[in-house]
Length: 138
Length: 214
Image 1 (cartoon, rainbow over the protein chains, first blue to last red):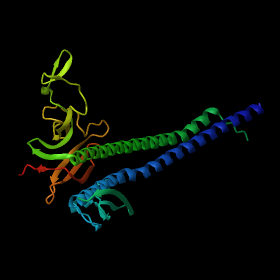
Image 2: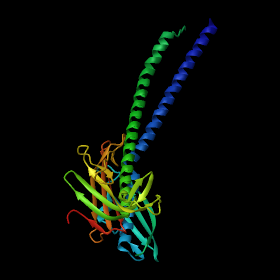
Image 3: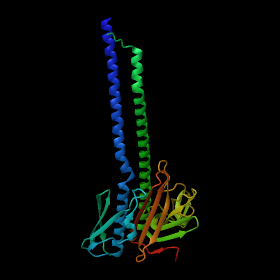
């Protein structure tokens, strides 16, 4: 009789521990996935890849202007439409537009190396792309 | 003291504690899963939106770069941008006559088809048509001639990311007629987000660029 009671107690205690462990693990899984999702949420809401694409297109605009105007060597600011420098891509409707800063460096010679740098700020962090192209003088 | 732990009582107590916890946990898990699915849906919609916009921009800039003549047509319910580019085409079939299983040129000399001799450069119109055949949702269609039947659009033909064009503008530079300005704005039906890309392209071989205001 005594041995039976002890065995029963042990069984119940084992079940109790298993349930406590499962509750703890489930809580951990839920909280971790919630943290990961909350972290991803801001990135989905504020997509930087759209801004990268915008910057690449602005760099191409600068290349087209430099090639079209056949500019000599030197440093240049943005030559395209000024209105294109502000963009509302990748941000929420109510937030401020992103401002791009485009500059170009034209090299010497007949086949000039043109370097275009595009900079922009998003969420207090500075991003930039550098695009290079060889353009023949006409 | 005699304490007897009844099995039934312990099971009841266990469930009384565990069931609310379990329900709470399942609720939290469900909410997290729903949120994850929502984020994934937005991400796929954004991705297809960006990819389609960039695809159209790439096609138009690469065709514009090779264009000899550029024409823009405005009509009531559609706009058309036509780039005439040189491409390799076949000689006109009027020059050849088939007889006894052989090809003859002007009924005289027997000829063989040869890439070097009987193919030539022809002007190939590449027509981008912005059309609202889907009832207010503008999409870009591509065709080679006015008679072409064009079925599937270049943009917005995606199951996961439903989007359409809200602004599409091709303009000539005021100073230099060899520079083309392109503005493309698209809106997603899933996330209600808009993306707008502006770019320019230099057309070295362009001889004339006519806009409808002239």
